[in-house]
Image (cartoon, rainbow, N blue to C red; front, side):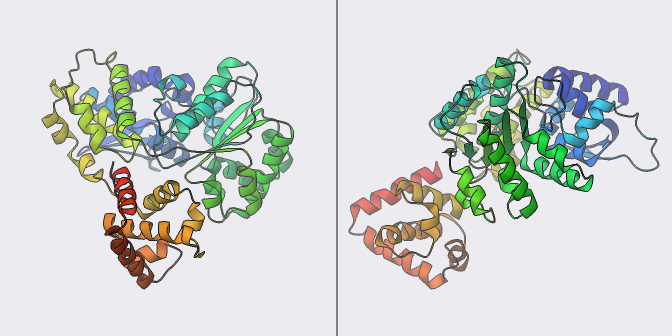
Length: 455
């Protein structure tokens, strides 16, 4: 691949990612080398390289393959010292790499991360696992005062937390000019905080964050255990709530389950609406695939997908929507390059590695969460030391399912249940086995849980 082809591909990406994302993240990239299927690109900073890898690598890979480039993997790295330095990035773009881009309709520079143009409400597929989270996000995005503050969204990877947060920001921007909306990750919040300490600009930092109308912080579990950052986050949180400014937070688990988070912050995070995005079910995954196909038909009008392919993918790739969407994009690119219909055989051939990696692997944490939801008890009580009968039986059910549905050893399972001894786990498993023989209700409960976990 030569520089001219990369320039052409880069210009095509501008139409897909939007003007701001292109200027801040794609334009600074230079093509380096292509060797044995690995395309190496040079970036001006590691920050840009990391961001592009996480957010745009699949899209770039698809464009490269569509252009006939024999690439199977990509690497974004700093240019070698011997290589001439790339042209200086414009000041506005350079500022974006240091502080991330602006998510606001004003001209003031706010410390927000760039919004993905694809993450809007009309592209969010709603189903039972996420309908409450979607409804709450919609309510916040209306821009009116809501009865819950903050809105706290939590769930595993690839369930739609970030999509909903971007959608809220997009909607607020479109509804009201001049609204100061900031979306960023907890890692970026910490980075800005440390930078302000180093540069002795804490007053500027405080004023900047406490002057926004809507603050959205993604992956807040990242600041757990970082005392100084938690302290500043707590005061920022309080200042905004006191001004009736809206806060939206996301994490990979519920507030009370985030280890090393200060109690006062946990309490604050729980004072609004806490919503769990449950793992996707088959119907929701199929709906997501169908929407993606409709979107791609404009780009690939001659694309033919055989009956049963989408259903197969929705069934086999069940643990991560990002992986599911990435698999579909790979199929599109492959079928376009070789000029073939997307059949079930082609799907299994093209996605062999993804299908192997996506074979259902049930975790102990997933079992514990599902059991606590089924019996309407808190996860902390299920794992904790209390021996009430109302807790002991669900705990034993979770132990039994952990033994049956995972490959973990008894000592490993014991560690996940509050560091209990392996003999306690063995007793719990045997107890459930005995009860199931005579208790049809318990047997039904366990079968229902098993099906839900294996779905």
